[in-house]
Length: 544
Ligand code: G16
Image (cartoon, rainbow, N blue to C red):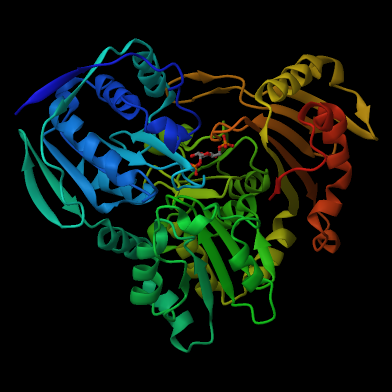
């Protein structure tokens, strides 16, 4: 095998964010940019560890080209076998499942998740380790250090692989196998959920569902699951064909970007159930007829009902949520007598808790939920969970929510995003606010007393690693919270996220408008952080 050693110099901007390295396509297309980062991943692994590698992406622009490069570098680096998704496609949850199934060294996922794609859009790369989960911070720090000193990378000279053709091809000293992950993933889901029970929902045609794949990765998986295996009507899956630019859309399953689905679900002939997933298939949004379920509430409902699902007959062993996620699930955990862990934003922080069996369910406000079945959040899994639950309870989504709130109280919750603001000013907002925290503790603002405030830090209970500066928290006397964070997944400027939460135990007050209910907290959030002054924005760009 002819290995070429290519000289290179470091790029200084390859620090992985919340979920891998995400940049504009043009940045990735610079000579040696992708190669440097991939080599740094491989250099962070021991030579003896290089056995099976899995590669795949969400199908966005540059996916195919990047895969051909990574294949040749993986062979040069000494991997014995490389599995690659057919047409270069593997959803993030399917990747996690495949890594675990094949006991692979790890997987490379090419995705910028919910960020837009196309030649002017974003591209991204992340590495998942042997447990199927995102590389922990220790490893991403190591990869980043490598990017600052790299001076060469290795690649073999070889013909490109036909990514559309299933089968095995030798390449250098290794072999490359093109695999179809759809059937495997669907089989796996069939073990966790009661497909016969869900089928009864669809059998008479009375129950209708709409799933928006947003022209991203979940289309083929969703068609197989909902239309072929579960008997939902053909056409249930909309925007099913993965496109390199996601059809010009923004593949983020929220009320703003999944507007086609939202219009249906709130329209006159709304289906009973609606859902959407994102670019790489790990996020989900759940909707009922004229009803939106916040991701935080979805997690709480799952926690309260886990025992109904065949794959989790023993019920909830423990649960975790990211810090900004609402405390709705904490109330369920308390009633069920299990521990609820509060982690920093980022799925990687759930890995140790899942591996050590401290939890079997976890989720985030950012439209992510999952369980110990894999080590990533899983969009279609969440949709199947809700379908199975609807089949068990024989209730509508709205009824399930009302019952849940009656039992546990309602956490009114919203996130206000200020996207693409000036990075320096956004950092100043955070540092100014942080500096004022000690003075603000104990003060009352508009009648709301701040009982505690801090910059969230987390010590992992399994390996004792410590993560600091994870978001500014303000806790109020009545249990309300305001949290401020800068996003770790954007590629332009900075995105300020403001998370707002208010608890309402009284069931008479459970049908109010969320933004109105949170109006005073929204005002306080502005007063505390002087958002308009620092960002120059009158309004958030996205409200979820
Ligand atoms: C990623 C991470 C999630 C995280 C989310 C939001 O999601 O995997 O764990 O909650 O980013 O991050 P931020 O608030 O920093 O933008 P995804 O779906 O983009 O991979």
